[in-house]
Image (cartoon, rainbow, N blue to C red):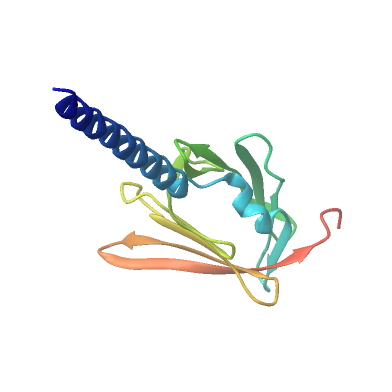
Length: 168
């Protein structure tokens, strides 16, 4: 009888160790799926894009808590033609880009891809855009791509921004 009890105890012990190992692996896997707002530190600061028609400035503040706050301001011929309040926040281990553009409803875009030089947010249910991408280029500038479907075609625009002094 003791031999059977000994075998039973070993099986129970092995089962316990196995279940704890699976639990640890599951926890590690979950941690790897999460993204921290701190991973976007590369976008912090002031950025400027300009051409002969308009100038756009975008400013991203450092992350505090679980949120990063930004704003955008576009001027043409000395007149404001658009502005936007922006934020990126952590929700359930993922990042959400929230845009509140002048004259429009707030829209949320959900993390699709995040790295040390790229962030992609999508919302296939939004009218336009459905995808917002920021790339940090090797020269330290940013390429932003805003795109989505319009009239059954993929449409979009690119913004190339240089880092600038926030006070100038």
